[in-house]
Image (cartoon, rainbow, N blue to C red; front, side, top):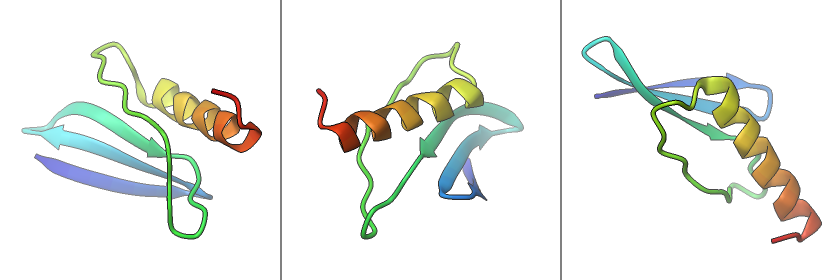
Length: 67
């Protein structure tokens, strides 16, 4: 399995690929002092855009203190 990293502004997107097939995505929306928080979604139907959106939502929740 290969992990391909793309940096887009403050967002890092990892794409997991095996034998040419995309297995999934990890999106890190924001890092503060070298740290990141969030969660992991492992669903076959999630695409890159939904993964990025989930990461952004988790950042907003963390910054506002909502749980």
